[in-house]
Length: 280
Image (tube, rainbow, N blue to C red):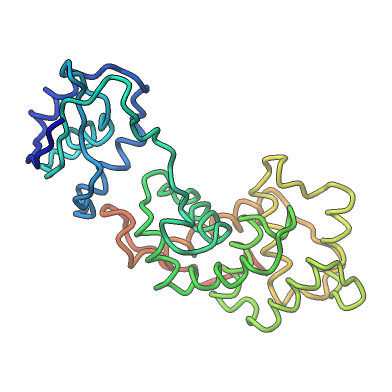
C-alpha cells in the first residue's frame, strides 16, 4: 500500500472517477454540499482522501472527487493505492450537526428548519450553522428556547423558531416569553393568558399537529400567541390571508437576522417589515 499527497483538479478528478467501482451510489446533493464548502474556502486537508484497490479501482472518495468537478477548484488530498478489495473502507456514516458544531440537536435542527424556509437549508455546512448560533440574536434565542421542552409540539422547530422570531422583533419581551413557553409546555392552565388557554385546547382536540404537515398554519398560530398584544384574545383564530402574511413576516425576519452571515453569496439583504400588523 502506498500513500502520497496530490493536487487534484477537475480533470484529474474526472480520470479518477472513471475508475469508480460504484460500491455506493453517488449522491449529487451531498457532492454539491461539499462543492460549496470548497468554493467558500472551507475545505481542509485531513486523513480522509482518495483510495484505490490493487487493481486500480476507486474504492473511496467519489463524493470528494465529484465536488472538485462541481466547484472547479483544485484540492490537495491524500491518495492511497494498493488496498485489498475487501479492506475496510469508511462506510460513510455521517456525524451529526450536533457533534460537528458542539451545539445540541434541537438547536441545530431549528436553525436548519429556518434556513429551509428561505431556501438555504440544503447545502449549509456545520461551520455556518455554528456561526449563526453563536453570532446572531435569532441563533442565540433559538438555542435558549431549544432547552425548554422535548414535547412533540413545544420542542418542535416550528414552535421554537416562532417564539424566537417574536422575541428578536420585540413582539414580546424575553421574560414574558419564557414564562408563557414554560406554562404552555407544562400545561399550567391556571396562569396562562386567554390566548394560551385557547392554544392548549386546540392542541387537545387535534387542531395543531406537527406531523400533519400544516406547518404554515402552526407557525401563524404560534406567532399570534407569542405577540404580547394578543394575550387577552379568547381564541387563536387564523385566516388563510393571515397565515400567508404571518409566514411571509416569519421568513423576512429569518432573512434579516441571517443576512449578515455568509450563508449564501447571492442573498440580498431583506429588512424586517416596519409594520408588524400581520402578527397583531
